[in-house]
Length: 287
Image: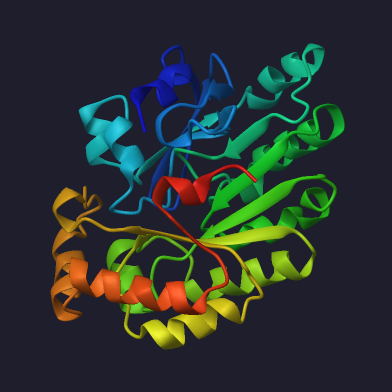
């Protein structure tokens, strides 16, 4: 990802409204724009759309932390979140130039279904706007089971896909790298529900964290009914490891003897057993 993804954040104006949800300080801001021309890793799309800045899930390997606007925000990734409270109003301005058949990725640098979405329904309001006035081609990226709330809307898009991130088969590993995120089982159950609703789905193992048993994990993935999968390697030496989880995460890597060779062995199992496997950037191409 390039810093251009954050160009719409440059003119954010702070609002006096602040609150806290869990460990995250919530701030409400007025954003300059809501659609960003896709570049870099997402260049195959027309636009990325991020209802929030930052992410209260705070995964310690998240690349988005590197592009935060200040050193303090980078170091405290996961402990702050900015709500673009004018996001819907900004999107409404596009009614004069409907986004028909445009490819939109929601979201590239945040999670559209993190905990505060339950209260604000900001992502849901955006989906309603897109459905009624634009009819774009959507890809929703999340690691939250809460995406099932919007099945009623997603079913109405002619072309929409929900990507669910599931990075490991081990809850110990998940807690070491993603301590603030929903469990693996809850994510798999959610994406199964979305699949059974007739919506196109994908499981993204990006990055792939240490795996206990590749064969049984593959069977668990297939049991969801999902037919499309994406995988990318995890580079321990490049990990940001925010939220004071570095030692726990590295301990899990060592404990499970995780290495590039191990990663390649697991991916080879995926290639043999999964119906469709995309690797890296190619896997994220628009539907």
